[in-house]
Image (cartoon, rainbow, N blue to C red; front, side):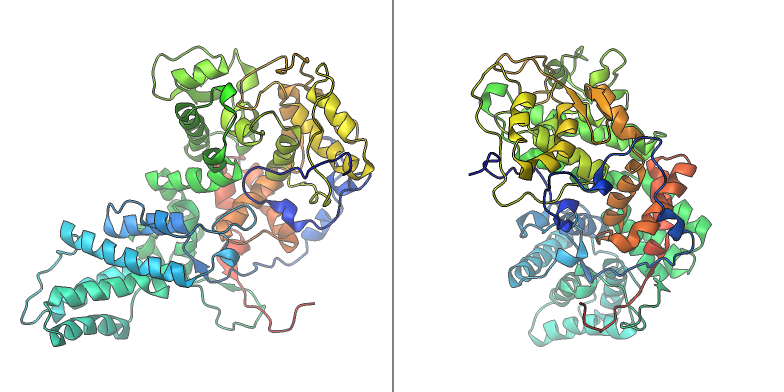
Length: 555
């Protein structure tokens, strides 16, 4: 076994490194060197000024578990979380709403059938379908109106007369079997919930094999928008705007975006976008060793801290880049004690300023992130450095070679982890990638595996939080490190890439580079808030258009 030992593993969801096929070399590729603020402009950017934009295409998009739960909630009222019993969703490009990996299995179809039956029975019992009375002698008129209304909302589009009559036919079927009309209506309602029109977000190409871009319909745009911002179905206001043919109008589209972001349902951006981009979801699976005193109340406080901070970026006036050094956070007594901050004297999460504790500012001072990017028994500069590179700068290293691995056990207890990593990098097959990854992780070494501040490691070695990046950019400590990252010219484009990937439900590929550049520049020009990024995305051709796919074989 080489000096690299066991394979190092990243924590959390798969990210862009899976796309990279090069191996770790003696030196990192020049394209991944972190440039300084005065770095020359990428000459390829000039090509974007005249290059055509390819909107790409999204595969037939099955609702993931979060989208299913939210959709049946908005369709039927309080429904709990029926999708919790469904098989886990796969992930693509870091998110579980990637259409290409949301397959349909016989087991999942069976789960949908059981869920539909339970949902309809519960809603019927609550009186959710009492809009009209089913006349036992002539139930068709009421059934027709009820099913037409329900199917329109569930399928997120107007339904045809033929479709309505096929649903109403269940009433006649029930009568033939000697059952009451409501039995037939319930069967029809269940049919609506297991229909592909409900389970999938359908977008049609007039010419499926044509690569010429075309606008998505207003109704398709409504679903794109609602599942981007709410992870759920369009509400009545959005659906009416789409049915009226006005949603593509820029002022109408912007008004709908702002209305939707102000709605409590926009919490889905916190749970589903930020939860995966910032690895907050991965906190559920972290199991630090017991000696660190990590418990469930602390886990929950860390999770809420990240959620509440990001929520301010959804509704507030902060620049998205300020996530890196936001001078405030949310703590309760348990988390404040863990961080060494003054206690707010309440178990409730409370907003506090960090003027006297700048080390806690921004993402890199958050216990949730620091915990999920550590090992159970020690910190991991590699995992923390890779997280910064992949999630903030989109400069993830290639996959490690087959024999690459973890840090060798400490022989000299006076050596801190930085010195031990230096020994690890002696192997030339490891040195190239680690030269890029490790320094960023060293900048967070003052935080232990559960995010507590420290100046010495457990063995007594003094923490060295300094680092030097390829190109000579040096820093000492987390405050200087985050300043370097915030100044990186690729930060805005990388944040755009992740948000666009989530918004579209497909990976942002190399052919999207100019689109990503356009969106990030427009967003920063308008103020750089999360709202500015979202508006720039929904105005882009990638969001407003799609194309078919040629039948020619791919090389």
